[in-house]
Image 1 (cartoon, helix red, strand yellow):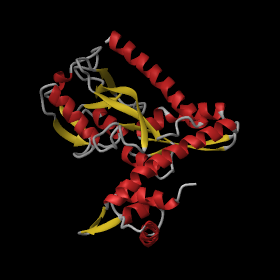
Image 2 (tube, helix red, strand yellow):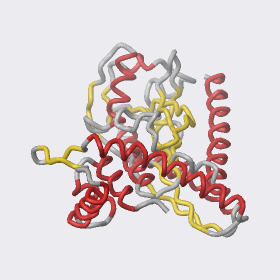
Image 3 (cartoon, one colour):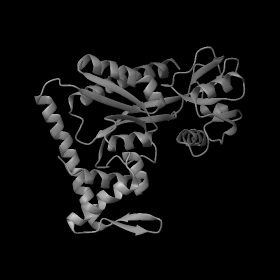
Image 4 (cartoon, one colour):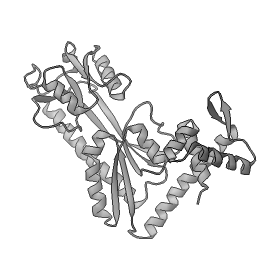
Length: 311
């Protein structure tokens, strides 16, 4: 087994402070500090240096972290080999994902895992993309489905194995009586003069819409701010503006709204990824979940192609 103090060091490096790492580990800050001091004393080198109100990792700590990442990846591979040799076994697979994935993808993945591995329980955790990576690193989730944003770990991060899963196109959401509602598809530029309903500034979806509108040649006039799809749908149904909604997003029934596909090159979309701890993807239950996600993504791609042709 790997010295747990290495895991504590990894969490401090990931979260940036002892306090944040302690919160993620459900430890007290003093317990985290004690473990790191004991590790430093055993190695005979300092690992952390006070820097203002924060801390800085020493060069020795960074060397140790690089080897720790290799150790943990190898440990995940060993777990996979043991699980494959041991038959079905029992355990709990933890699936994490942002809100749309948690609703549209993960329940079907859970059903497939249950069917393939009857002895396994499956738990779904809805979490923002950044939190999904924290859960993976803390060994509180096994598979994450996330939207790619600039704030996520880079694809070459040695702690994780990330794979592109799906391009999720954005559709225009308008009132059912809107001038564009009956169109088979529209250019985003056709909405330049409309009032817009968007997420709050600083949120990834807000930036995604801004970028899409800028590529179409205009800056959207923001009339209202809504963080949830059902709130945005209610505002659109009231005739208060238009919005962009991902195709995977499920909207409540009963609203007087229409979803209109966008056309153009490129059409705005979200990039959806899967991530696991590096080395863990061969573990049977994790491999089944990843395979199920690929199947769902293939069906979604086929449906998107059909929509593009009909539009």
